Image 1 (cartoon, one colour):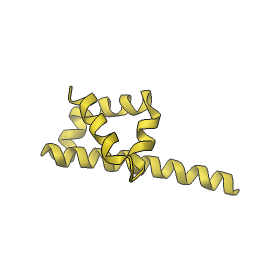
Image 2 (image 1 turned 120 degrees about the vertical axis):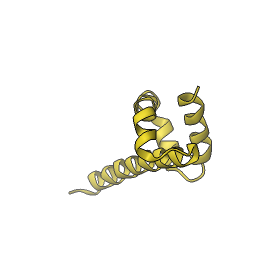
Image 3 (image 1 turned 180 degrees about the vertical axis):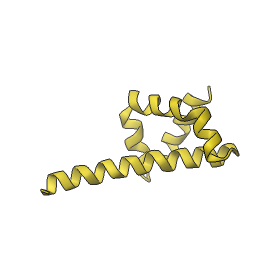
Image 4 (image 1 turned 90 degrees about the vertical axis):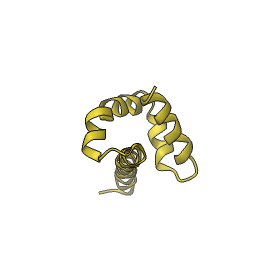
Amino acid sequence: MGSMEQGMGGNIEALQRARNMAQIELAQESGQDLITWIGEHANDFGELVAEKPALLERLAQDDTHAEALEEVKKEIYH
């Protein structure tokens, strides 16, 4: 695999990891277990990051994670 493909794969993995970790963090903050939180909010979360892919990229970055997480909360808990 070429370095460009490796870089893209690494980015995809980082975004998937950020997506998973954000959902775990949101579930923990809500006081719900992960299965319950996913049942209630995963579709909204998925739609939000599909509509705003830059939001997922911000969740993956340490310097923008907290702000992006607050934006997610505002959108899915409205």
